Every structure is written in structure tokens, then in C-alpha cells.
Length: 286
Ligand code: KIV
Image 1 (cartoon, rainbow, N blue to C red):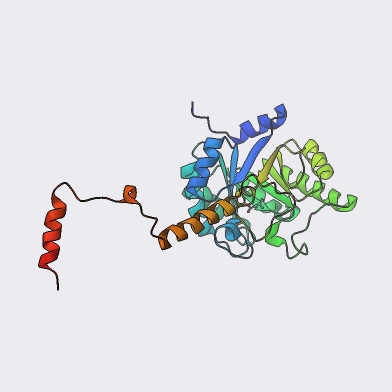
Image 2 (cartoon, rainbow, N blue to C red):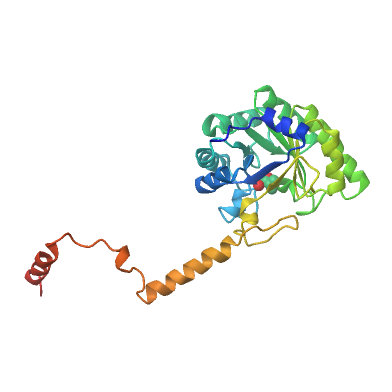
């Protein structure tokens, strides 16, 4: 039987009942189909697509138009999974009005279920404005890649009691502003556990330990496709880069040695046509 689509209310129920949510990024139709067939609860069309799909060095160059196109593909591939669009850099930083207009594009043009934006107290008015427009918002605090320059690079956050308290205050402010979901990135598990317990809304982890209400990984990391670097919190479940490279090497060899294509890969002429073709060839011979 096809699974029923999860809503934000179901995600809240899962938190209350202690059921962990499984969450991955996805950027394309085939991956979204695999994810839905595998029973993932949630998918994030992350701006990590900048690195994982386009080969950029970071997420900053990613545009709204790129995000929308990838959300559309993922929505088509996973119609029954909770799909979230990630608001790219400069789609919400300038004004509340911009934030609402761009969050609205995600829903109108790609039918996602929620949008995510990075930042704690400094994006509170943005969160309120998007929520007031009737859109489900997921906050994202801790390591926030779009502002990693200000954080001094891709570094874990909240490793001192003082900085952990700042994270808790940000988390509370994000929830008070109306966000219905929160993501913690690269935060010590003991800090994440405290925030998850303190907040009524579901709190998810990417590199924030096992006590959150669910786990997110970047699909390209977990299937072993993205090779530039692997964060400490990643567990690799497959070696797609190894499998695909080996397949391509074998193909190169087969083509060079004329092992491929074999007879079973060819469309032969219809019965009785070959003799006529050879006669025609003779007519055209030099
Ligand atoms: O873009 C993304 O995939 C993300 C994760 C790093 C959380 O925002």
C-alpha cells in the first residue's frame, strides 16, 4: 500500500511518541524516487546542491531559480514524502518582503511542504513574516554554511557552555517566532539533547547526536558520491563514486576492445533485407 504523505502535524506527533524521523537531502528525480521507495520521512532540497550538483566551492552562489528547478524534480520523484526547500543566500537576507516572496515561490512553483532558512535571533522577523503568510518554516542554527565566513569556517558550534546557551536562546526565539521545525548542525550531542528536550517543536540533527527527534544527512555524502571532503558526522552507506568509476572504466575498456556493443545490443535488419542492402551497397561502390 502506498504510504500516506506526512504533514508537519505528523512530524510533531512523531516527536511526542519518540519516533525518530529519517531525513536526507535530494536534488533530482531519481534520487527522490529511491528515497520515497526506501521509506524516508523527509527530503531537503538543500542549497548544498551548489557543491553536490554544480561543483561550486560553497552554497553562496546558489540561486532561487536553481533551487526551484531541483525542488520541482524532487517533488515529482517523491510525491508522498515531506519535502522542504532550502532558501539560498540572499533570498531572505535583504528584507521580510523578499523572504515572503521567495518562500512563496517555493510553494507556488514547486509544491514543497516547508522552507528552511539559516540563523537564530537575527532572522526572527523573516520567520514571523513567512509563517504569517501560512508557510511552514524550519529554522537552522549551529553551523550555518551560508554565514560560515563569520563563524571562521565550517566549525562545530556550542562547544562551550556560554556558546551553548546562545544556541538555546536562538532555538527558543526561532520556535517563538513560529517555526514548526528546527535543524541543529554540528552541535555537541549533550547540547542538542538539552535543546531537543526544551523545545516543543521537532528538533533534527545533522551532526548533533542521537537524541534529536530525527537525523539528516547529505545524500551525496551518505552514498559516497561527493568526494571533495567528508564531515566527521557522516556515515557512508555506499560507495557510489567507486561503483560508478569502476563501471565507467570497464566501459572504456569494452569500447576500446570492441567488446561492446555485442550482438544482443544491436538492431538487425528485417528478414530478407540484408541481401537487398548488399546489392545497394555494390551499386554505390567506388
Ligand atoms: O543545504 C543543505 O543541505 C543544508 C544542510 C547542510 C543542513 O542546509
